[in-house]
Each structure stands twice: as structure tokens, then as C-alpha cells.
Image (cartoon, rainbow, N blue to C red; front, side):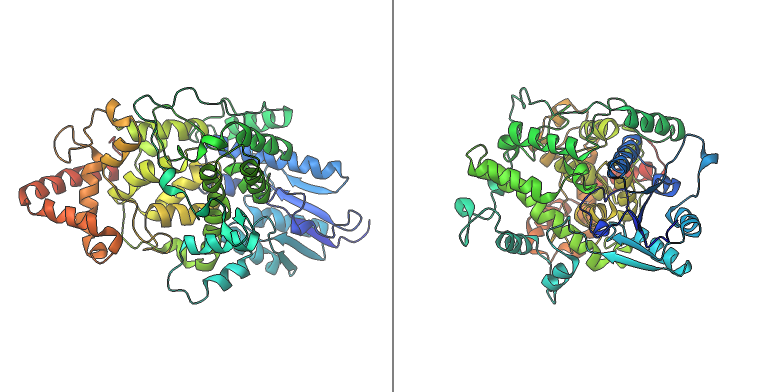
Length: 522
């Protein structure tokens, strides 16, 4: 048997046949290594559908590689833990290195600083060179983002997004933005109105094949105590299925995506959203493919600029931006807690058991589907956690556990930074705090809730509203010089002009936070 030249490491979020780690792959001299492992399944208490998605997609990618007659050393988990070949990447890789004796390890840039460090340490301990290649999946390289960030005192998405639009020539008419505007946010904040969303287009699903069914069975047996379930699993787990899902979105939902991307409604699960983020983050489909398809729909007159620009902004703008911030600010970023928040994640975020209609409906979506669109995440679940004072690292860990599309590079900036303001303003110049009034404006939740969104005190006071005023009250010194918080600070001062009212709000908030701390129902 010839000596093994390269052992190519392919991780569960790198399922791309054009992966840079596979450049120059020679099946006569190289081999591929992939590993399901216990640590990645349990270091956060992973949703069953998230586990099923990752493992099913990995096994299908393994089979696609083997169809090319490429040797793949794949370590699969089984229902019986006694059959495991190691607990984590390092243990499994070390055993493989001793057996295969490669000359070198090769991988593409990881999506998780912790895992990258673990693999680098393992390579060092095995006295092997680890070659880390750039990830071509993204538009913006980490070096280019670092150069863009340069000596800027603040990193502003809008500046980055416009530069990406220009450099990639996306939605540009010469040197001007298509539609004569860089963004159409003002057109894309509509609620469904009193009549609700009406009949929504069906979201294309995919029937599990034998490989996926075997994964589902293993997950249910091995991880039966994890949150969520695998019932109705219909996610794309191959490149072909991901492309079909993209076409379904472009043809049936993109045109209405823009205006209603922030809208909320009871039992609304996917609305006009693409449900492509998990496939994107596993590299089952590329961002260029998604952006190009949306732009083509605009150029062909099949989708308005408002919807297409909103979709493009999420991928070419926000997605690239948060990845750049993650690698620029790690490893210290994960320890940030600018507001000194200390509460655990509310128990209802694991069970869905709550009297709050907004949180209950959002959590039903998360528990059933491992999904919630960005406003449910930011302005319902994120909002309540922010107002209450949940520790940003704890909120990130929960986010990683419960969402199908959560990879560390995207979860940490979004959860700790954008949602919980744990970074003190690196990602957003103001905290996304609000009272129940915002939720009432964008949804029908408050009409079906036992709490009154207008009240901060009393038995029927809205916990979101109570904790909103308490949030401002306890953090006002941090925000009083923030120009984007002027209106909210002034409103707080009006409340403080009534000391009796503020004392009542503080007391009710104290009780709510104590119940969250004890894991009691809220």
C-alpha cells in the first residue's frame, strides 16, 4: 500500500465538492477523513433535528465522495455509545493518524475557533503539519475583511455591504445601485394587517431516504432526552435537494419576501422566508448561487427590487459581515458581557411552556422545526432574554443548541452581539430593546395573550414590557450618551418622574428575574 500523502479533513459544515481542501486531491495518494462525534453533539444540548440534519448531510456527502472512488475514512456514531472510536475530533483524529500515518493534514478554514484550535493542537501533538486553506464558499476572505476593518473605530454593516455590492457587481447599474437606492428597509417592514397572512405558498420539503432514516433512528435512540423531535424531518441534505429548495423559494416566495420579512403571526412557521440558511451554512449550496438566482429574478421582472435587495443584503451583506467580525474578534469575543447580564436562559426556551403568546409561538416553531425567522429570533426570543438580563454566552449556547443553521461563526456575533448587546456595540450601535408595543405592532400575538402589552405592573402586565423598563433603568448610564437611544432614555426619565410607578416596575421585574433564575415558569 503506497504511503499516504494527505489526510484531508472535512468537517460537518464543509460539505462542498469544490472545497479548497480537496484541491489537487489524488485518490491514489490521498484520503478524506470525516467524523461524527459525541462532543460536537453534546457540548450544547442539541436539538434532535439539528443532529439529524448534520449527520444525514455528512453521510450523503461521504457517499458522494465515494461515488468518485475517493477513499473516505468516516467515523459514524451508533445508537450504542460503546461502539464510539473517540469522544471528540482530537481523539478520533489521533487514532486515525496512528493507523494511516499520513505525511500531512489538510483542511479548509474552520467555522468554529474552538474546533480549529483543537485540530491544530492535535496535529502538533502528532508532529504533523496542518495546512489550512482559505474557504472559497464566502465572497470575502478573512484577510480582505481584516484589511477593510483596518483602523476603523466602528464596523458599520452598511459601509461593508455597499463595498461588497460594488466589488462583486451585484445589483449595480454601472456605478449606481439598482433601483436607485442601496436598501429598501422602509418598504420591508410591513405587518400582515388585521386579515393576517392569508394562504401562504407551500415550502418544498424532501422525503428522507434510507440513509437519512437510519440517522433519524440513531438520533432518537441515542439522544432521546434532547430537545425537539425528528417528526416530519424534510430538510435538504444533498446538493441537489438544496438547489431544488432554492428554486422553490425563487419561484414561489421571493417576490413577497421583502415587505413581510419582519411580520409575525400566530402559527406562521416559514412565511415567505427561504429556509436556506442551514443548507448555506453546511455548504450544501453556495451564497453566489443564491444571490445570482435572486438577481436574475429581478432582472427578468419576476421579483421586485425591494424583495431581492432584502435577500441579497442578508447574504452578501450580513452573513459575510458577521463571519468577518467573528474571526477578527476571536478568541476574546466569546467572553464579552458589556451589560454584565447573569441570568440563565429561561426554562421556556427549552420547553415552550409559557403564558406569553409571543414566546410560546416562537418556541413552538423552534421545537418543531429548529427554526425561527430573524424577527422571531431577534425581536421575540432575543428581546425577552435581553430585557431580562440573560448572560450573552448562555444565550449563544442555547442558540447553538436549538437552531439548525447555527455554526459558531454565525451564532456568536448574532446571539451574543446583535441580540444581547454583549459586545457593547461592535455589531450594532444600539441594543435591540423594546416593549411589548413592538410585538403588538408586528403581530397578532398580543390579541391572543393573557398579558396586556401596555402594562408594566399588575397581574396582567406584559413581562416583555415590565422587563423593558427595568432594562433601561438598570443600564441607563451606558445608553444616555447614545444618540440612537435618546428617545428611549427620555421616555425612561418620564417614568422616573413617578417614583411610585418605577418602584412597582422594579419590584415586578425583580420577581420575574428571580423566577427565571430558579427555572420557574414565566
